[in-house]
Structures are given as C-alpha cells and as structure tokens.
Amino acid sequence: MILFPAIDILEGRAVRLTKGDKNLVTDYGDPVEFAEKWAASGAKWLHVVDLSGAFSGESGIDAVITEIKNRTGLKVQSGGGLRTIKDIEKRLGAGADRVVIGTMAITHPDDFALAVYRFKEKIVAGIDAKDGYFAVKGWTEQTDVRADEFGKKCKKMGLTCALFTDISKDGAMQGVNVSETVRMQRETGLDIIASGGISSLSDLMKLKEEGVYGAVLGKSIYSGAIDLAEALKEVRK
Image (cartoon, rainbow, N blue to C red; front, side, top):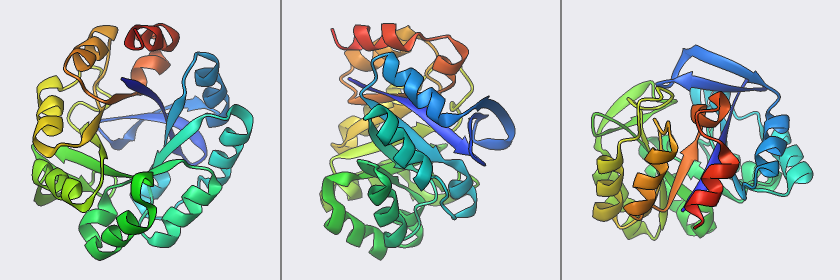
C-alpha cells in the first residue's frame, strides 16, 4: 500500500481543515518545509492540494509544487482548482506527476473525458462523497450523482485510480470508513486511495489487510498520532 502524506495549501500555508470547513482551519506553516520533512521520513509520494483553488476555482500553487520537486525529488499527486484542460497542463508542467480531478468531471464532463484521453494515467478521479453522493467545489455543494456510479463510469473511461474521501470523516480523527472504501474499490474496479479520518496505525493496517491501494495521511501525521516513518515501514512489510 502506498502512503501519501498530505500537504493542503491555503493562501500559501500548509493547513488542515476539519470536515472540509475552511472556517475550521489549523495553520502548520511552510508547505515546502513539510515536504522536506515527509521526504526525510521515507515517503515516495506527496498529496498536494490547492485549497484556495478548490474553493475559488483559481489555482495558485504551481510555483510551490515546482519548489517541492526541486528540493525533494518526490512524486507529487495534486488536486484542487483544476477546472480546465489548461489548469491541468499548468499543474503537470509545474512538476505534478498526476492530478486529481473531481469537480470538473461533473460540471464539464466533456472536458473531463478529453483530459482522460490526453493525459491517461496522469489523471486520478477525485471521488468526494457525502452520504454516498458526489460533492464538488471544495465540498461546498452536494450533487445527485452517486459516488459509486461515478467510479464505475471512470473505470469504463479507462481510468485506473481514484482518490475516495468520506467528507464526514475528513480531519475529524475519528477513524477511516474502511467498509465504504473497500466497497468502492470492489464495485468500481478502480485502485482506491483512501482519504479522510485515518487516525491510527490500526486504521492503516485494516486498509492494507483489505487490499486497498493507498491512503492519504493528513492531520494524523501533523498531530503526531501516526509516526510517518513507522507507518511506511509497516505497510511495506
């Protein structure tokens, strides 16, 4: 299982939100310093999110991604604020190895299909779910699209990987929704990266035992609830 230390960037700062609420924010500091810290702990990937872009639709972290790549050499998976083909091109051009697309898939499905055709394995479907339904625009709007049905559609389009976030769990440190994550992987046929609520090494081991492809670690590693170096060693056994 691949672990993705998360660096969520809001107005240039590394932050964590609780349940996606931008009013419930904890500021941790310089995102590049955290990238270096996670690299030193043994990470191979980072999950870098432009929260400003997710809320406003205007991306602004390309320079940060370039600096992270130059200073750490880590692979970067990035989302947030990617609403157009041009946005995707810029994020990839800045150094992202692959990008997570969520809102655009619902609001501009033709552009999403074109992005999948053009960038193939560099596209990860972003499936943010609230009560089983797809949520968009930084989780501020819930749609009538079922999350699992969207995942099945992505698989038919040729995608292989999806980031699945249970919004009710994100940043709450209340445990990951293992059963729903496993169900998403089984029913969609996609490699699922779990996100939201992972609060202990036990959570990670449950996901690993169920064959889940990957997991994003956020508040748990910033608070010290999970030691990233130890977790990496355990999931690689």
